[in-house]
Image (cartoon, rainbow, N blue to C red; front, side):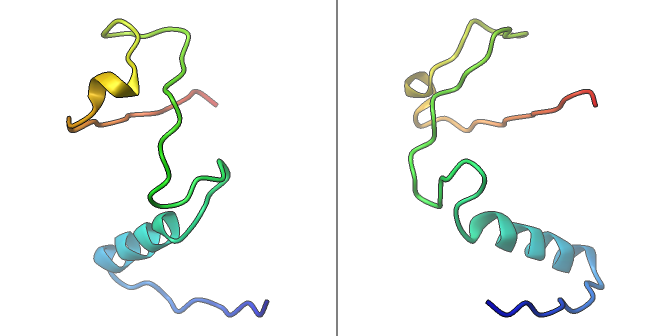
Length: 70
């Protein structure tokens, strides 16, 4: 595989487009690619609700806000 240097990104819209292309281009660290079913949500502590399941969220708009202290 030949690696080429990327051209400079000059606008915020171009940066966003490049990021989306990277995210949507293929499987990531999880091994999931576009169109693959999402894995079940896991978590020990739910702050604003009882534990959720994907089946209960089907057909709804969902925003996942993930963060950590490092």
